[in-house]
Length: 231
Image (cartoon, rainbow, N blue to C red):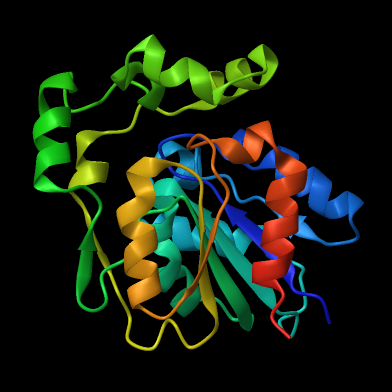
């Protein structure tokens, strides 16, 4: 039985970062779900229990014996252990796509001290600007070759509270009891890819920007199918 792909977007952005890939997966004969973390809990911040609930809700109606492949982009990689622990469905594989890695044990801070120091002055009444507003245009523009896609991603971004980045996410023991792999797009995640190798995971490199899955959905799908459907 083919696994169903669960494409988890970073809470810093929105589901549009995965929808083109979901469409191409469907066209290739696979099933995919894209949980939305933008409005979890009636607009409440996406703290980790609400992220797990959003993924469970996206799988409502899917038979519990249907295997799933978890695919996480960017910051969403930190949530894979609690998502895995919180699902009733068997997990066939997890694929981290230009993603942050959870700690091996204990808890994972969503943001490093350096990132919190960078974000703190940006917060107004405890709430941050949208993710694309953190950076200069020279950093953002290369990620969007399609102005329509850019507008879709920018418009749905949440203005998250600083407290989202201050949270620590549990790492349940045994969460990685299935094949895990890493798909690397951009140089800032070289260190995460190297750590994935140290953990014994398969690592595939597809040079691009951090949102390369929007720029090249067909190639992204080929890699996800290869990594996410273990024999």
